[in-house]
Length: 150
Image (cartoon, rainbow, N blue to C red; front, side, top):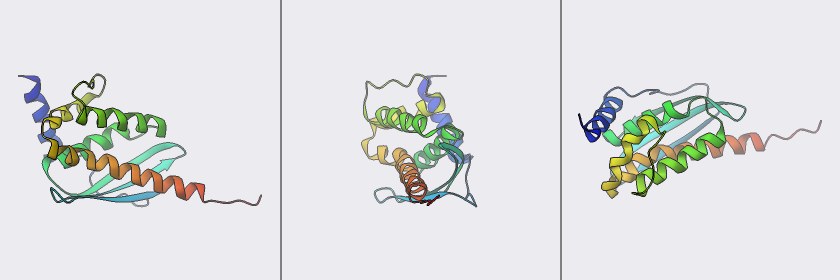
């Protein structure tokens, strides 16, 4: 089996059997994402434990790449701290847009590398990551707006 076939299988599996699919309640933050070119829509909900993502879920509908990317993203970031998540976002973004980017140590996320050959599909694969960033920004704003007079 060639690597491209293996990558295709990973994407198909995560599309047919998405991990962490559904709404997380209660949650600390929520963000909605929409890709008007493809019609993908998703919502990311997450719970944090300090700087760590304790749990994350996504719901919505979209193309196979969008759903698979969201499924793999939730698996990859659950339990990770913010700095690790930010670094992973940068690596995945580079993987999707830069042919010289390395997929080493990305695990299943490396299967998204084939998307960069189809520029219109890059937005499908990156939608969940941008939505995650919006949810984290909301969570940061909520925790930053907590004021104590003690």
